[in-house]
Length: 213
Ligand code: G6P
Ligand code: MG
Image (cartoon, rainbow, N blue to C red; front, top):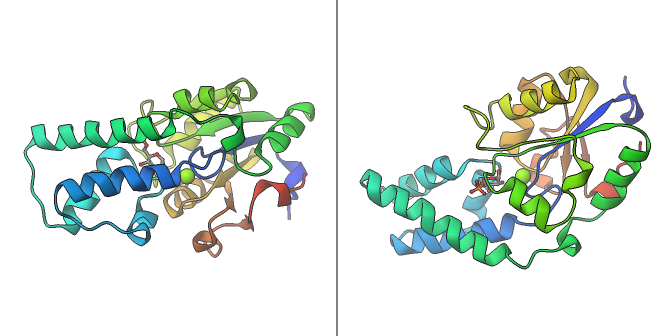
């Protein structure tokens, strides 16, 4: 059995692993759903963690049996994103989740390769806001792949960019779709900060302060 120190690269999901933006996504989706008269709870939002913007809106429309034209659909995508971006404009490094900066700093000192693998098309903007973009050798986001999580594509592309095979990388995830993506790509999946995924992940930590390597 490998230990955490046996891996050559770490690939991190962004939302919910490096930074606490999941509540912002939830509130923006709730506003969007309410525009259509659809109720949207935090429990329902659990199913949208790690899920792309387009698939998230499809999920919400399905909840309310709503059918929209392409134009209306795209307007709602823009509305959600604008309301999300407005809510995160004041993010700083203080909004990094517990243990993130320490883990990234230690990994760099140890010479590990570091990547972000995120479904979010806002990933680069957020990494800049929270001032951790310089830690990463590569950032693969939702605009760079054809298939998003639970497809492993985002993580496979990140590993390829790092010059590593999936078996040489640990993937850190807070969402069921992300754990599924990591495992189907042949990665070891570390669950962080979301007890709902404890059973799905290969290992689980409440936050990155518990992760030793
Ligand atoms: C992440 C989040 C999801 C979000 C998705 C797309 O995976 O966990 O909640 O829907 O990214 O984000 P974006 O910023 O492109 O709308
Ligand atoms: Mg996430």
